[in-house]
Image (cartoon, rainbow, N blue to C red; front, side, top):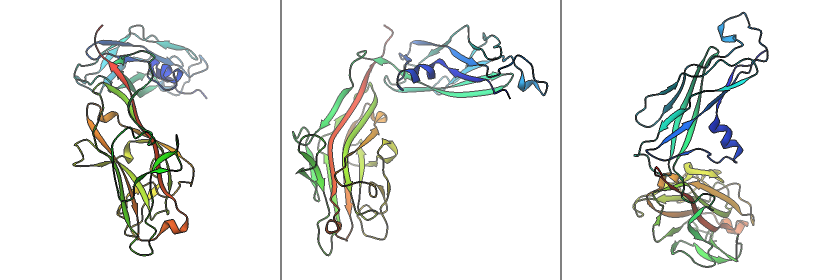
Length: 328
């Protein structure tokens, strides 16, 4: 049985060939040009007789790119020839996309490819980077780095958090907290947060916070979370929804008086002595100043007496690609 035609933009092919990186970048307020490949999945030139949706020759007209930014009117390319069975084709006239100057340099614009054919309609989201790297081929820009050994940044430590000589991802030190080890009234809220704000450049894209940690908590009763503030520490938002790798692994139970309440947290699957990496997408904070806060919560029970070693955090860094926009 023949398969349906398979449309796919050149953007996706280039993205795959470059290890998941964006191949296409467009300067704000400058035009970009796009071609669309469409493959006819039918393997025979014989035309099925059931209905027109089984036509062996595919006629992809019209083809539209619909942006999610104003003006949101679709842009149609009428010049796309019929594609024979088993063959591929591309539009003879490229799309021209105008990225408005109001979009932040370094942000990502989203469009929807809509392909109408005699075999049906196909849609595919397309993401386009606004701007080009300020230095082509340059390494990522390090915005913030803390390895604990060299005390590169100033931190406020409360409720048991300390710079600790022991398990470390690099060097010999990491930040550490654990429960107090008391028989009664053992609950604790540990806080580790940056004293000064960290500036994320306006033209930053692919902004990533990463760190390594060991979390060896009493599962479900003790745990840790990461929070971010963009107003100088007046309010904090949980970073769980921004995590790309190494995210939270469970809820803290409401059966104990852990200061975290029933928060989703790192609590259950950490292993003693084993560092794991967390990666957080901070792209939405470009152009802002932020603070980071690690918050550990321990309930009344003394987990340390049962062998749980608490929370070790090391090699905290923020990196980004800095973009340049213009018509030159």
